[in-house]
Image (tube, rainbow, N blue to C red; front, side, top):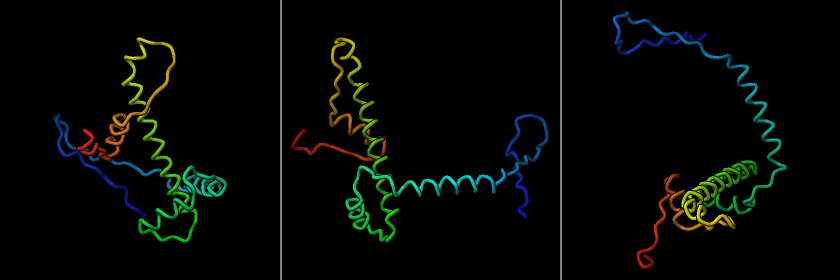
Length: 139
């Protein structure tokens, strides 16, 4: 059985003596069984789901990245992760566009159409650590 870890405060600002802090871990068996159930349900639904990025395209890029897997579920998981990443970037870019056009929309309340510009996209990509710059001959 694992001993219960004890934590001691580094410094005490009051005149009270240092007291050791004791914490207990949650019941891991109930947490892990729920996690295993939800994971098995997710994997069961994975076969019926078709992501936006087709499996052959995802498989090509997975192989070109150096990942060799014979399991199609791995490719599908990577495809779903890429889809999530792209949808997050698109929604962040839309928010950037809405904030940029907020002043223009106050003047005209007519039709609300948004145009995605490279500035919106590059500011959203910068949040994810991707730097996009225009070539010097276009500036």
